Amino acid sequence: MKANVGTIDRTFRILAGAALVVPAASGSIGPWGYLGAVPLLTGLFKYCPAYSLLGIDTCSLKKEAVS
Image (cartoon, rainbow, N blue to C red):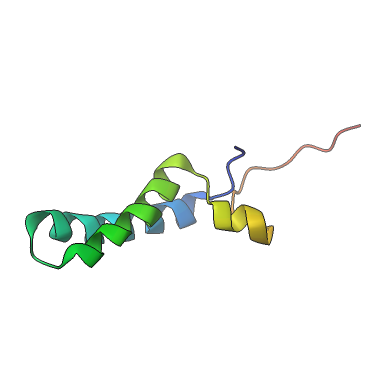
C-alpha cells in the first residue's frame, strides 16, 4: 500500500470523519454517522482505495526518477 493521500486531503478527511463519528457515538445523530469511519480511516492510513482505482495521488512527496 503506497500512500496516495496528501497532507491537506488527509486533514480534511480526518476532520470530516471525526465530525460524523463522534456525534453518532454519542447518539446525537443516527447510525448513518458511522459512515464517517471511511474518511477517518483513509486519512489515518494515508491510503484511499478509490484513489488507486482512479489513478489519483494527492501526496505532495516528490517522486524520484529511477535512472
